[in-house]
Image (cartoon, rainbow, N blue to C red; front, side):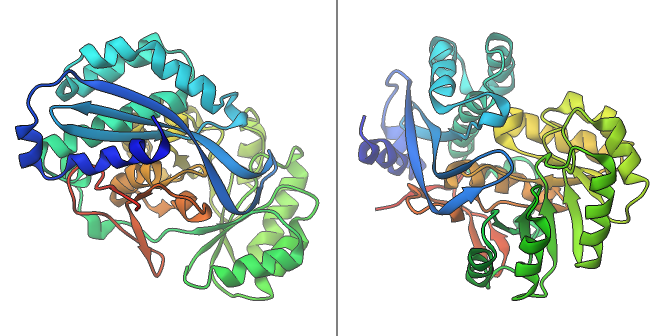
Length: 365
């Protein structure tokens, strides 16, 4: 299946009357690796690239097609081909299941597939998109949420030279809050470059970049003076005790990202972090992400929805859950030049959720 025909299957989802008329053809499951080209080279402490490969899944049944996406990254020892193989390994399980029994289906997928969280997320999102379309409601309505409660999203500035950092900051003029990647020896020049062209609130992500707790304290205390609201994952995920030590010596919240991959991680993080960054790609989809947000909130922790560099499929799925959280960093689709779909929009930094059934995606012409 070529890219055009794969994306075009989304158009078959509307309206529901057409779906009802389509009869009871056997369900199908299509997988495709898509190369997403970045507008700027994307650099963090972990990698640098001009493109990202993500796995797209199309699940069709009863004339309705649900779309899903998983964005695997090297940090979790995953890639797009591994995600595709994981989905193919449970093809018959997915096709034989009743998609309206999605909790049962995903529990079986989680049991059978070890690791490969991005691949599992692609299945979960496709099934939930299908369910929302089948019910004729947007997924935020299924979860009982008000789309007007969606928070402002940050726009991310990757690590670069001071001059290009200034250029990226100017290009993000429409966004009221920026997120800046740090974690290298160039942290101070990076933040100073941003601050030279804007006084907007900043949020900072170190991506496990600081290995020494004293260094982390020094850098965070300096960031506080630069008007940074909070810091994500200052130290490696396994350094929970060290992060607890850092937390007692700084004055802005610390948010767990790489240290918080799934719901079972959250209780042990409570005393070291003020909140958690939930991503569908590292948790395994919408259902586990919802679970994570609920657990974190029950423990009195702040909640954030983030994303990988991905298309509007994965980002829109996360956006449907965003009315639940305190913070959003859902700009992965805005960083690419060849998004195959339209979904969630951003106006003056605010997430505007589609009011169409399911994810509410529309294929780009």
